Length: 171
Image (cartoon, rainbow, N blue to C red; front, side, top):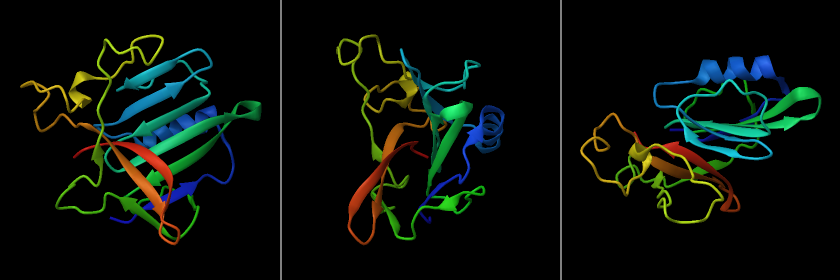
């Protein structure tokens, strides 16, 4: 496990971004997308509706973030615990993650709790797969092939400052 934070030096066009997303996609990959008028919630498939203002793609090993810039291009950031950087430029040398105790947190991630449907924190119901919520205990959602939503902190070793909180899923 080697934390890495990197970016694409040049903004990507929509086709280039879609190729990168397709290249990085794995079986347990999820997306969170933002438009000017709505958010997608946490979804399992990338919709055909492009462009959006921002998006995140995440799985156990990494989170990929993109943000719309001028001329229909996107800036892209990669937060990963994997040593595979896919051609990204290193942002800094001194990253560590929290949690980093594999015995307590085998996925190197803290559990995340979804909001109950009756809570009114969002104007519309926030969408995410029930299988991702660690509070919902059902036979179906406890299957080993159903990951749970989690988060991982990327800190600067020198200052102990948290710079990024990445969405992830447990192994």
